[in-house]
Image (cartoon, rainbow, N blue to C red):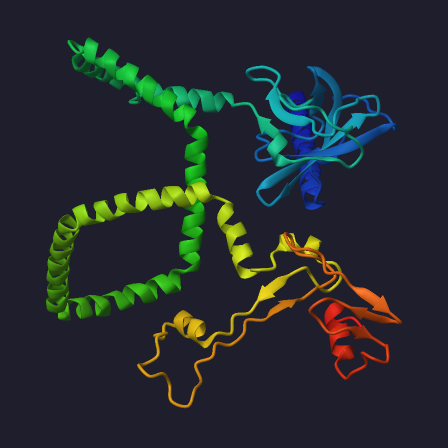
Length: 413
């Protein structure tokens, strides 16, 4: 009797537990919503950060958050966004981590619980400070391999995997290398030299690949032009095929022209060489003349008044003595006309020679080798021997006084 009562009481207890669980399920609550034991006490002076994981395995809220294997915080919440799990972590205020910290999902033991390990970045300088609302992106998170994954890989290797084939691989390698040790060593040495050469030319190889990439980009940009050119090539080939006979004739003519030109050059080689040898003395003398040629051309173009005579001129006249030969026979001889008249002379032309006057341009300056003329002055009149007197005297006044005065003063009044 007592046993029946106890059985009935146990049955009612089971019904109550099942009813309670059903009510929790109908109410939309889960066990994760209830406060669970464990985790570090963070207090009010704490901050929260998020970490993105590609796979959180069986991580649950209230799991530990550790730094250097010391529990410092806890997992507040786990949300799934697309194919990424976002884990909300709560940390105490006295935990200082760099802003580029890393997060890794680890396991306490072989069959232990999961936890999140926070650490500074490895191989990179720490920057900033992790604070409220910061996020650790997917490229700075990871996880350790699971025991199930290790056992699965071992089973694949041991059960029909690579272990059964290691014997065959070893046997075939021994058969291939047996008796070829020298060739294998030489091959390894050549491979080492080849790899070393590739390493030295790594920069050039990268530059060549970049140039090929740019060339490919340009070819892709000009794809339409290349297609049009390829479409026009058959027409051009047809034109070349139609004019093949003309091309052959042209090439044959060029061949004959080349043979003739070669023959001409060979025959004129000696004459050309002789001409060049004859020009050598002339060119040598011209080279010796040097700067004298421009100076002589300057004197020739300014004859008889060169640049050197400008210092001898006083005012607008110079000491120049000119002798004018007006004899017709001398003029005819200079022009190449026969100077001897026919027998009997020219009819109607007297045979008297013309006088040859001597005109001093500047009487005031004596010429070398001639005596200075003596002039006399009487009552404002200047007289030079051999010339009319110039002045204002009553006995010498004439209409030619002004012209002679102009002649004596070089054109000055």
